[in-house]
Amino acid sequence: THFGFQTVNESEKEEKVHEVFRDVANNYDIMNDTMSFGIHRIWKDIFMHRLGPTKNTKLLDVAGGTGDIAFRFLRYIQNLKCEEGCHVVISDINNNMLEVGKERSKNLKLDPKLITWQEADAEKLPFEDNSFNAYTIAFGLRNVTHIDKALKEAFRVLQPGGRFMCLEFSQVNNSVMQWLYDQYSFQVIPVMGHVIAGQWSSYQYLVESIRKFPDQEKLLEMIETAGFREVTYENLTMGIVAIHSGFKL
Ligand code: SAM
Image (cartoon, rainbow, N blue to C red):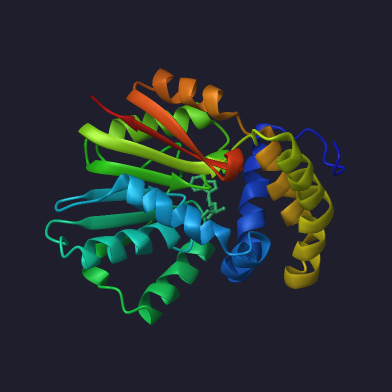
């Protein structure tokens, strides 16, 4: 490939993803800010506004990493004073990421009663059917080996009426932006990863995983195939990322 990666098979991909997030866990938050010029914060804010949680929201945040989405959820319901009956489970396959998140939540003095941390694979969630009324996955789905299995699991653990929401890199819909974006991701990101975090190949992996991920329409179809209804998407920043939403009806 462009990056000297061979086509990886499934178990190699799982291993690679595990290695990448183990290695980047400590630098993850600072790298996100540096590489996206802080824009990932705006994307995540918009994502939480679109979810618009209210009282009694039981959220499962899958591939929750160091807690960015879950912490926004808690801030959102606290600002609206609608914490009653709310709870978030932050799950991730990689415990290193969760450990960083736990430290952050202590520093932010978030109410520990409202949060549960759970190591879990998105493809095999350790939760009963119909356990949550909201499911979020942000910058996580492209790291999962079988997207269809993760989507089925999302459908299973949601209650009828529950909402699925995904924030993920997608396909840019503007040719000038596409050119700029290509230069940036191929030339700049691996170098920055190397210089700031000492991790060239992990950041090559991240760029490559974005290229391979299904585009907006294809992902919409996959979400429908898993059983969701009223599936829609919204592009942010000309499709650099997209928010997909669907309901279990
Ligand atoms: N959601 C967080 C955010 O937006 O900042 C973290 C996103 S981070 C780019 C991707 C996360 O997906 C990593 O923490 C990684 O460990 C996790 N991950 C990768 N494969 C997974 C899987 N099969 N199941 C659950 N989490 C997974």
